[in-house]
Length: 141
Image 1 (cartoon, rainbow, N blue to C red):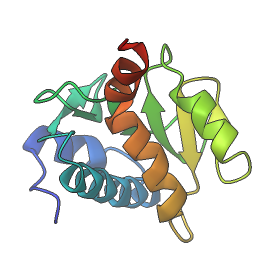
Image 2: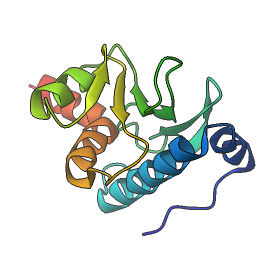
Image 3: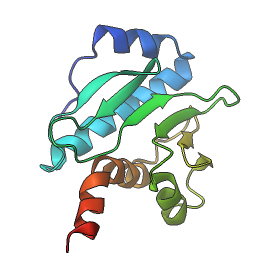
Image 4: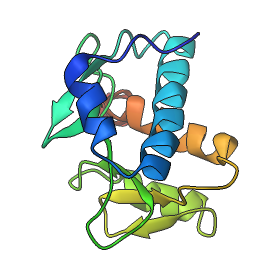
């Protein structure tokens, strides 16, 4: 599965990033769409801008938490941002303590260069795209 064409406003947001970060985050975008396509529970993604950054929402199914792509002001890393009110980043930190750099409960940081850690990153992105399914499952009695 290849990712759909970029919406015009999203192209502008990627274009506003430093080139190495933009390229890295486009790789992450491809991975997000591939993971969503492989999981029937996720459904079609909505690609839009939130706070001026590319954002991926599971509007069709409500299965996941929003994923945003961008950078943090004080970092030269690519940032994958998550809702800080979720337990996602804490879960990533538990599962992959040495694989990624993290910022509080909101971001997973990736170096702009080098090999993309696809396997670990796929687990993290899948957890985000199914976050509400997992939580509903735990609450169901």
